Length: 339
Image (cartoon, rainbow, N blue to C red; front, side, top):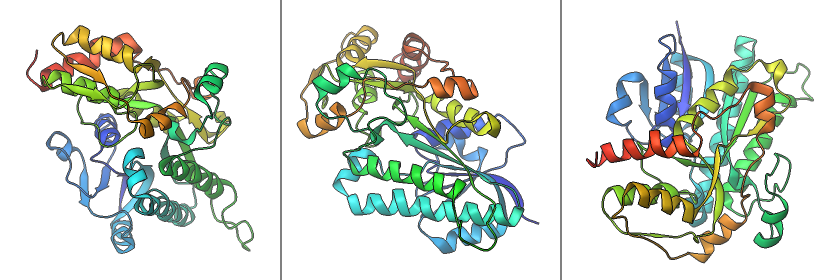
């Protein structure tokens, strides 16, 4: 008898860490996780973990022989900056890995005769706005269907995977004699994410969390973003909440398969000011990397998340003050013995 489980890929990453803790609050959830790396010590006891490669089809087949998947949270990805240095690998991990899992979800849906949920975190990187002065001034809050012209491999990968998910949920095997049960694909587009408990791992928005962690350790930090660079952010607990809320939303309430979510929008200079207020000895300077800055300039200054607000009751728990004052600063101080 196969065990029913919620399957999470990329479980040792920043979002995975928060998501596992949140899902584990419900004792009825049996969690099955996959990552190339072991899980952090504080969450190992919460899940059955497999160390392995998402592209290993034999491993996936063995897993399916032992577990009946109720839902998939597909977090595994090569992030934005890393993807620019290894675009072929990014395509393999971000696209081929997603396609493998969508096919697996389709097979499971057909076998169980009901849709398997596929929850997919997308990214602000799918947006590509032209000239900063012109576009960011005119389009303060960008909606889901606007400026879907990414300028990074990561953004291209994420946008294509959104489209793959929509295809598997609406049109997969549409010419077959017997149409299979569709995958229940749902996606959130995240802004920059900031965690107090995990370190940044190669995202283009990581200048924000890098400032915090460097200051708490008493290390100087030179931001690769300009002082006036402005994009939306979200505290990591809200990211996990958004994924779970979307998964729990009644299908009949959803008007789309992909939703923006966000919390607050800050410039790099405003983040610096909050960090210095918490750590007066912080040495933060700005030495923009023009190539990474150009990517940031192509992203919206803010996201319109009114569809998520209306359809499934999205509300971030952490506005900018609560994110810094109650979540980030106290926990990062504690992490580095600065309390």
